[in-house]
Every structure is written in C-alpha cells, then in structure tokens.
Length: 262
Image 1 (cartoon, rainbow, N blue to C red):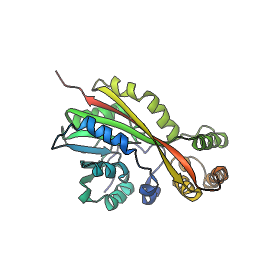
Image 2: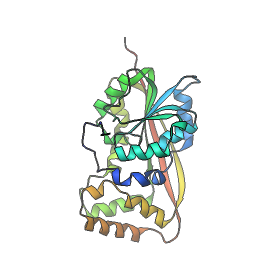
Image 3: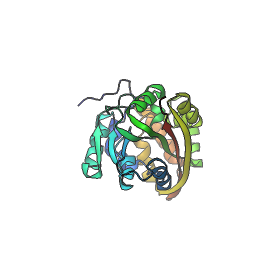
Image 4: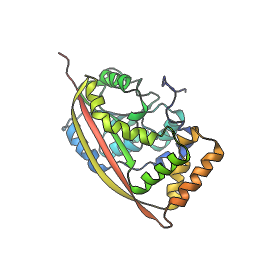
C-alpha cells in the first residue's frame, strides 16, 4: 500500500528508523493525558479518538491504557507497519494510511483528534480544515509535544548549528510552532476555547541509549553527507556524561474545541 499524503515528507524520511522508533520515543506525561481525558471525554460512554501522525503508536498505546479506542492515522508505510505489529487490534485502534491533511476518516466520525509531536510537520490550514470535517459537533483537537528540554540537549543543538549552520531542524521548528500554536489554532476560525496543559518528566538514560536515539535521526541525515553525519555523531558522543544521567522532558499540550455552526 502506498502512502496517501500529498506532500513530500518534511525533515527527512522516517522509514529507516521505524523498527526502533517505539523503543526510543519517550512516553508522554500521563498526568497531562489524564487531565485531557477529563476535559474532553466528560464521562461519555461512546467516544472515538484519532491519533493522527501516530508514528508507531506511542501516544495511541497510552490513550488505549486510559480506555480510549479509535484510529491511528500514519502516512509513512514503514512506521505504520511497525505500529500495526506493536499496537495490535486488541488495543482498540484501527490503523489508516492517511495524513493530517487527508485522514481517510469519514465526516463527523470522531470526538477527539490528537497529534503527538507532529503538528509542526504539517500544513496547519489544510490540517485544521480536515479536522473540522471529521470531528463531531463540539469535538476537540489536541496538539501535544514531548521534547527533551535540558541543558545537555540545548548544548548539543547549539554545537550542531556551529558545525552545520542553517540546517532545517525539526526540533527547532517544533519550538517555534509551540511559541505560536494558540494563535494558529484560533486564527483558523474553526476552533476556540484553547486549554494549555503541561508537565515535566524525568528519565534515566545511558550514553548508549542516548546515542541510539541520535543514530535514528531523520532530519540531519537528509541534509548532510554520511561522512559529515558521522563527524556530528562523534561530537555528540563526546559531549555526553560518562555515566547514566537524568534527562528532562516536557509534555506540552494545546486543546481547542470545534466551534458550532450557526
């Protein structure tokens, strides 16, 4: 099956990292997801959620653990296939080969759409129009990110910029979009009532685990030569502490509600 996305992938191709992605992607803060459940679900017995840009299913699995069922929408074939083998049907999610701009969901079919660390990779206007189409009246959309946010990460990013100035970094784009996401969501005129929730979580990592994550990078490798990429990896490895260390992640979410039509 071919992908249905209508645009070229931004920030490189995820296909080569698909087999490792679910092991490397950190979980979202459950405190944030529980708060969101209380906000959007309100005790409804029949409630359908769509995780759009689902990757290999990290967020969908956490939503399943909270009792949600619905759809996992992912345009990349390799990522979706890995997700289907990892997040099986018994978890309550059906996989679709759609994109944010073309989900393949039917009109007014879901109550809540989530995009986990993906909204910065899409066309916001087309995406919000598509979500307006597939959400039921009063439905919700949540743009949520879970990014490493500590001094080590900032130092590494600054060093990469020194080595290769002007790289199109997904990480930096995500930060820029988060700075403006409320305005983007409300400007559409299709959504209102923006709620922001965030939480900080900590995770122990070893040098090996951190380097495994960097070895699965998808944006830098699409912009530099293999030799240059190996040089960058060596610089990153030299910056890491010799022992295991604590990483800080921040889960940040913005949730808006579909406006009623007069």
